[in-house]
Length: 129
Image (cartoon, rainbow, N blue to C red; front, top):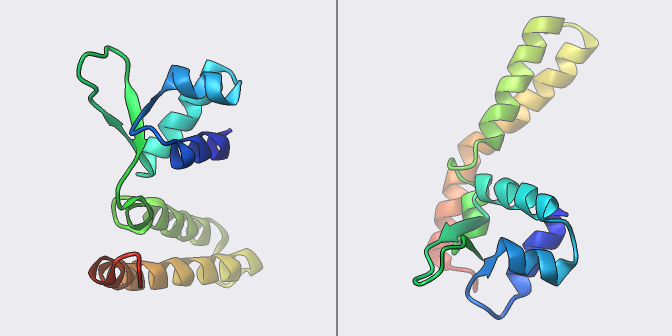
């Protein structure tokens, strides 16, 4: 459902959509829409925006969303690296699982170092490349 809600916000010709509008558009439950909106907001792909004269919450696809998704604002890289460290502590670095988790940790360390420069390059060159 999250992918469907994301698609609705990507493809709409309106500036914003309400949860109710998404529910009607996709013919899905309001609970599914609510869960998807929370998820998409938490990773920085969409945002709540004020709508003058409306008491309902409006959502839109966030400008710069893809860079935000991969930036330090999104804690996924940090969380995954910390999970690997916790796993290594629990299993031991020399165990089979510990070696797998070590590779995971090293991968996320690499992403953590390299992503900021890539995002800066993206911003400098814009989406037109």
